Length: 269
Image: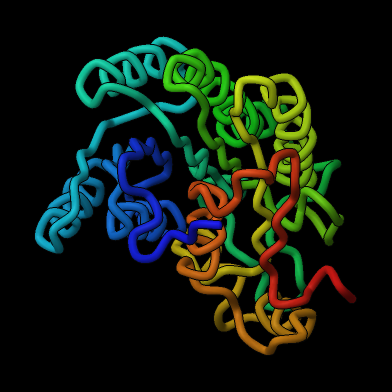
Protein backbone atom coordinates (compact mmCIF):
# COMPACT_ATOMS: atom_id res chain seq x y z
CA UNK A 1 0.00 0.00 0.00
CA UNK A 2 1.26 3.48 -0.89
CA UNK A 3 0.80 6.31 1.58
CA UNK A 4 0.60 9.98 0.63
CA UNK A 5 3.09 12.09 2.55
CA UNK A 6 2.96 15.86 2.44
CA UNK A 7 0.41 17.89 0.51
CA UNK A 8 -2.96 16.16 0.18
CA UNK A 9 -4.62 18.10 -2.65
CA UNK A 10 -2.01 18.49 -5.35
CA UNK A 11 -3.60 18.47 -8.81
CA UNK A 12 -7.06 19.35 -7.49
CA UNK A 13 -9.15 22.38 -8.47
CA UNK A 14 -11.52 23.42 -5.69
CA UNK A 15 -14.46 25.82 -5.71
CA UNK A 16 -15.24 27.08 -2.20
CA UNK A 17 -18.36 29.15 -1.54
CA UNK A 18 -18.61 31.39 1.48
CA UNK A 19 -14.88 31.67 0.95
CA UNK A 20 -14.34 35.23 2.17
CA UNK A 21 -14.71 34.64 5.91
CA UNK A 22 -15.24 32.10 8.66
CA UNK A 23 -15.20 28.40 7.81
CA UNK A 24 -15.08 29.06 4.06
CA UNK A 25 -11.99 31.27 4.26
CA UNK A 26 -10.17 28.83 6.52
CA UNK A 27 -11.04 25.98 4.17
CA UNK A 28 -9.73 27.96 1.19
CA UNK A 29 -6.47 28.63 3.03
CA UNK A 30 -6.07 24.98 3.97
CA UNK A 31 -6.87 23.65 0.50
CA UNK A 32 -4.32 26.03 -1.02
CA UNK A 33 -1.71 25.07 1.57
CA UNK A 34 -2.17 21.46 0.48
CA UNK A 35 -1.59 22.24 -3.19
CA UNK A 36 -5.06 22.82 -4.63
CA UNK A 37 -5.96 25.60 -7.03
CA UNK A 38 -8.67 27.41 -5.06
CA UNK A 39 -11.55 29.39 -6.52
CA UNK A 40 -12.99 31.25 -3.54
CA UNK A 41 -16.50 32.65 -4.00
CA UNK A 42 -18.60 34.99 -1.89
CA UNK A 43 -20.55 38.24 -1.98
CA UNK A 44 -18.10 39.94 0.42
CA UNK A 45 -15.80 41.13 -2.34
CA UNK A 46 -13.31 43.13 -0.29
CA UNK A 47 -12.73 40.28 2.15
CA UNK A 48 -12.50 37.79 -0.71
CA UNK A 49 -9.87 39.82 -2.53
CA UNK A 50 -7.86 40.10 0.67
CA UNK A 51 -8.06 36.35 1.19
CA UNK A 52 -6.62 35.47 -2.20
CA UNK A 53 -3.81 38.00 -1.71
CA UNK A 54 -3.02 36.32 1.59
CA UNK A 55 -2.97 32.88 -0.04
CA UNK A 56 -0.73 34.12 -2.86
CA UNK A 57 1.67 35.71 -0.36
CA UNK A 58 1.93 32.31 1.36
CA UNK A 59 2.82 30.64 -1.94
CA UNK A 60 -0.61 29.23 -2.80
CA UNK A 61 -2.77 29.57 -5.89
CA UNK A 62 -6.20 31.17 -5.51
CA UNK A 63 -8.61 33.52 -7.21
CA UNK A 64 -11.77 35.24 -6.08
CA UNK A 65 -15.17 35.36 -7.80
CA UNK A 66 -18.31 37.19 -6.75
CA UNK A 67 -21.05 34.56 -6.57
CA UNK A 68 -24.71 34.68 -5.60
CA UNK A 69 -25.24 31.01 -4.76
CA UNK A 70 -28.98 31.31 -5.44
CA UNK A 71 -28.39 32.15 -9.13
CA UNK A 72 -28.23 29.19 -11.50
CA UNK A 73 -26.83 31.38 -14.26
CA UNK A 74 -24.00 32.53 -12.00
CA UNK A 75 -23.17 28.94 -11.09
CA UNK A 76 -23.11 27.84 -14.73
CA UNK A 77 -20.75 30.69 -15.64
CA UNK A 78 -18.46 30.03 -12.67
CA UNK A 79 -18.04 26.31 -13.31
CA UNK A 80 -17.55 26.83 -17.05
CA UNK A 81 -14.89 29.50 -16.48
CA UNK A 82 -13.11 27.39 -13.86
CA UNK A 83 -13.05 24.31 -16.08
CA UNK A 84 -11.86 26.29 -19.10
CA UNK A 85 -9.11 28.09 -17.18
CA UNK A 86 -7.86 25.27 -14.97
CA UNK A 87 -8.76 22.19 -17.00
CA UNK A 88 -11.14 20.57 -14.57
CA UNK A 89 -13.18 20.85 -11.39
CA UNK A 90 -12.46 18.16 -8.79
CA UNK A 91 -13.73 19.64 -5.54
CA UNK A 92 -16.68 21.69 -4.37
CA UNK A 93 -17.12 23.07 -0.87
CA UNK A 94 -20.68 24.34 -0.48
CA UNK A 95 -19.98 26.44 2.61
CA UNK A 96 -21.94 29.67 2.02
CA UNK A 97 -24.80 30.09 4.47
CA UNK A 98 -26.90 32.51 6.49
CA UNK A 99 -28.04 32.31 10.09
CA UNK A 100 -31.58 33.41 9.38
CA UNK A 101 -31.79 36.13 12.01
CA UNK A 102 -33.79 38.98 10.46
CA UNK A 103 -31.85 42.25 10.00
CA UNK A 104 -31.74 44.19 13.25
CA UNK A 105 -32.71 41.27 15.45
CA UNK A 106 -30.44 40.97 18.47
CA UNK A 107 -29.81 37.89 20.53
CA UNK A 108 -31.82 38.02 23.72
CA UNK A 109 -29.92 39.31 26.73
CA UNK A 110 -31.66 36.72 28.88
CA UNK A 111 -32.70 33.35 27.59
CA UNK A 112 -31.28 31.13 24.89
CA UNK A 113 -33.21 32.08 21.76
CA UNK A 114 -31.03 33.19 18.82
CA UNK A 115 -33.69 33.22 16.11
CA UNK A 116 -37.37 33.82 15.60
CA UNK A 117 -40.01 31.38 16.77
CA UNK A 118 -42.05 29.62 14.10
CA UNK A 119 -45.22 31.62 14.74
CA UNK A 120 -43.26 34.82 14.13
CA UNK A 121 -41.35 33.52 11.08
CA UNK A 122 -42.15 35.49 7.93
CA UNK A 123 -42.45 33.73 4.61
CA UNK A 124 -39.96 36.17 3.09
CA UNK A 125 -37.32 35.31 5.69
CA UNK A 126 -38.05 31.58 5.40
CA UNK A 127 -37.61 31.71 1.62
CA UNK A 128 -34.34 33.64 1.91
CA UNK A 129 -32.86 31.10 4.34
CA UNK A 130 -33.91 28.15 2.19
CA UNK A 131 -32.61 29.84 -0.96
CA UNK A 132 -29.10 30.37 0.38
CA UNK A 133 -28.66 27.36 2.65
CA UNK A 134 -30.49 24.70 0.63
CA UNK A 135 -31.06 25.83 -2.94
CA UNK A 136 -27.50 27.17 -3.13
CA UNK A 137 -26.17 23.71 -2.23
CA UNK A 138 -28.44 22.09 -4.82
CA UNK A 139 -27.36 24.48 -7.56
CA UNK A 140 -23.67 24.09 -6.79
CA UNK A 141 -23.93 20.32 -6.72
CA UNK A 142 -26.03 20.16 -9.89
CA UNK A 143 -23.67 22.42 -11.81
CA UNK A 144 -20.43 20.80 -10.64
CA UNK A 145 -21.45 17.21 -11.37
CA UNK A 146 -21.00 17.28 -15.19
CA UNK A 147 -17.56 18.87 -14.80
CA UNK A 148 -16.59 16.22 -12.23
CA UNK A 149 -17.84 13.49 -14.55
CA UNK A 150 -15.52 14.85 -17.22
CA UNK A 151 -12.68 14.92 -14.68
CA UNK A 152 -13.25 11.27 -13.78
CA UNK A 153 -14.64 11.93 -10.32
CA UNK A 154 -14.61 14.43 -7.51
CA UNK A 155 -15.66 15.36 -3.99
CA UNK A 156 -18.58 17.56 -2.97
CA UNK A 157 -18.62 18.75 0.64
CA UNK A 158 -21.84 20.29 1.87
CA UNK A 159 -21.87 22.19 5.14
CA UNK A 160 -24.96 21.34 7.16
CA UNK A 161 -25.03 21.77 10.94
CA UNK A 162 -25.82 19.92 14.13
CA UNK A 163 -29.09 21.80 13.57
CA UNK A 164 -29.63 19.46 10.63
CA UNK A 165 -29.63 16.55 13.08
CA UNK A 166 -31.22 17.86 16.29
CA UNK A 167 -33.65 20.64 17.09
CA UNK A 168 -33.14 23.63 19.36
CA UNK A 169 -34.95 26.54 20.93
CA UNK A 170 -35.86 28.52 17.81
CA UNK A 171 -34.84 29.32 14.24
CA UNK A 172 -36.89 26.54 12.66
CA UNK A 173 -36.16 27.76 9.12
CA UNK A 174 -32.42 27.38 9.67
CA UNK A 175 -32.96 23.84 10.99
CA UNK A 176 -35.13 22.96 8.01
CA UNK A 177 -32.54 24.29 5.56
CA UNK A 178 -29.70 22.35 7.17
CA UNK A 179 -31.76 19.16 7.43
CA UNK A 180 -32.41 19.45 3.71
CA UNK A 181 -28.66 19.61 3.05
CA UNK A 182 -28.10 16.46 5.09
CA UNK A 183 -30.57 14.29 3.17
CA UNK A 184 -29.89 15.87 -0.21
CA UNK A 185 -26.22 14.95 0.20
CA UNK A 186 -27.11 11.30 0.73
CA UNK A 187 -29.31 11.23 -2.35
CA UNK A 188 -26.64 12.84 -4.52
CA UNK A 189 -24.04 10.42 -3.13
CA UNK A 190 -26.09 7.41 -4.17
CA UNK A 191 -26.90 8.78 -7.62
CA UNK A 192 -23.31 9.62 -8.58
CA UNK A 193 -21.22 7.01 -6.78
CA UNK A 194 -20.88 5.17 -10.10
CA UNK A 195 -19.08 8.26 -11.46
CA UNK A 196 -16.65 8.29 -8.52
CA UNK A 197 -18.21 11.53 -7.30
CA UNK A 198 -18.37 11.51 -3.53
CA UNK A 199 -20.89 13.68 -1.67
CA UNK A 200 -20.75 14.14 2.09
CA UNK A 201 -22.14 16.55 4.65
CA UNK A 202 -20.34 18.17 7.59
CA UNK A 203 -22.24 19.09 10.74
CA UNK A 204 -20.46 21.75 12.78
CA UNK A 205 -21.41 22.47 16.35
CA UNK A 206 -21.06 25.90 17.90
CA UNK A 207 -18.18 27.50 16.00
CA UNK A 208 -16.83 31.00 16.63
CA UNK A 209 -17.37 32.62 13.23
CA UNK A 210 -18.56 36.14 12.34
CA UNK A 211 -22.02 34.73 11.57
CA UNK A 212 -22.38 32.74 14.79
CA UNK A 213 -20.56 35.04 17.21
CA UNK A 214 -23.61 37.13 18.28
CA UNK A 215 -25.19 33.98 19.72
CA UNK A 216 -22.04 32.73 21.42
CA UNK A 217 -20.31 35.55 23.24
CA UNK A 218 -21.44 37.69 26.14
CA UNK A 219 -24.98 36.41 26.62
CA UNK A 220 -27.06 33.60 28.09
CA UNK A 221 -27.38 31.98 24.69
CA UNK A 222 -23.61 31.49 24.56
CA UNK A 223 -23.47 30.13 28.09
CA UNK A 224 -26.14 27.56 27.30
CA UNK A 225 -24.24 26.47 24.19
CA UNK A 226 -20.95 26.23 26.05
CA UNK A 227 -22.61 24.19 28.79
CA UNK A 228 -23.93 21.81 26.13
CA UNK A 229 -20.47 21.25 24.63
CA UNK A 230 -18.61 18.55 26.59
CA UNK A 231 -15.15 19.60 25.37
CA UNK A 232 -15.60 22.97 27.03
CA UNK A 233 -14.81 25.30 24.14
CA UNK A 234 -16.42 26.61 21.00
CA UNK A 235 -15.11 25.32 17.71
CA UNK A 236 -12.69 27.24 15.54
CA UNK A 237 -13.06 27.53 11.75
CA UNK A 238 -9.93 25.40 11.38
CA UNK A 239 -11.65 22.54 13.24
CA UNK A 240 -14.22 22.38 10.44
CA UNK A 241 -11.73 23.11 7.65
CA UNK A 242 -9.71 20.07 8.71
CA UNK A 243 -12.81 17.94 8.18
CA UNK A 244 -13.27 19.51 4.75
CA UNK A 245 -9.65 18.66 3.91
CA UNK A 246 -10.18 15.02 4.80
CA UNK A 247 -13.29 14.75 2.63
CA UNK A 248 -11.67 16.65 -0.25
CA UNK A 249 -8.51 14.54 -0.26
CA UNK A 250 -7.98 11.01 -1.54
CA UNK A 251 -7.70 9.92 2.10
CA UNK A 252 -11.51 9.65 2.04
CA UNK A 253 -11.74 7.85 -1.32
CA UNK A 254 -14.25 5.30 0.05
CA UNK A 255 -16.35 7.82 2.00
CA UNK A 256 -19.61 8.99 0.47
CA UNK A 257 -23.09 9.73 1.77
CA UNK A 258 -21.69 10.21 5.26
CA UNK A 259 -22.27 12.78 7.99
CA UNK A 260 -19.12 14.14 9.60
CA UNK A 261 -20.13 15.67 12.94
CA UNK A 262 -17.58 18.10 14.38
CA UNK A 263 -19.16 19.51 17.51
CA UNK A 264 -17.00 19.00 20.60
CA UNK A 265 -19.29 16.19 21.69
CA UNK A 266 -22.51 18.22 21.80
CA UNK A 267 -24.72 15.70 19.96
CA UNK A 268 -23.26 12.80 21.98
CA UNK A 269 -25.28 14.02 24.99
